[in-house]
Amino acid sequence: MNKNNYSNPLDKARELGSAIINSKEYSELKEAEKQFLNDKASDLLDSYNSKMKEYSNLVSKKDRNLEEEESLMAELKDLKKEIDNNEVINYQYECQKKYDKLIKDINDIINYMTGNNQKKSGCSGCSGCHKNG
Image 1 (cartoon, helix red, strand yellow):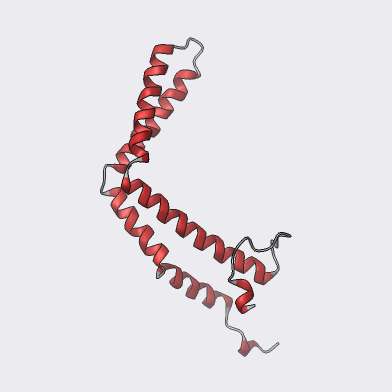
Image 2: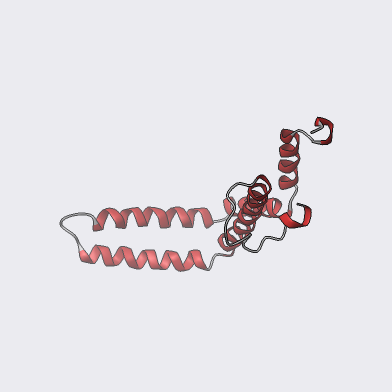
């Protein structure tokens, strides 16, 4: 094996990192994160998580207060509706899914090319490995 025919894997990893940073998925995710931080969306999620923790603590007590539980549950349902209808949260969620898929596809290709983690069922829809491998 001639070393001159193969690039240093660390150099390729740097190239891959740059390619990821320059990808549409990464750019959209970063934009979605900015929008999320500049919107009431983060406060909405913080409020939901705080109420959820409060509800959890309440239902774990020995002397449970059903009225308080129902009231908190109603608040949680309202907050959940707001979250589900929040465009900024939905946009960030969609961008995160696309970015996660990109990273998963990259990992699947690396695993396939190195002979690691091969599944008996094939590549689950990825068409990247066999094109160049």
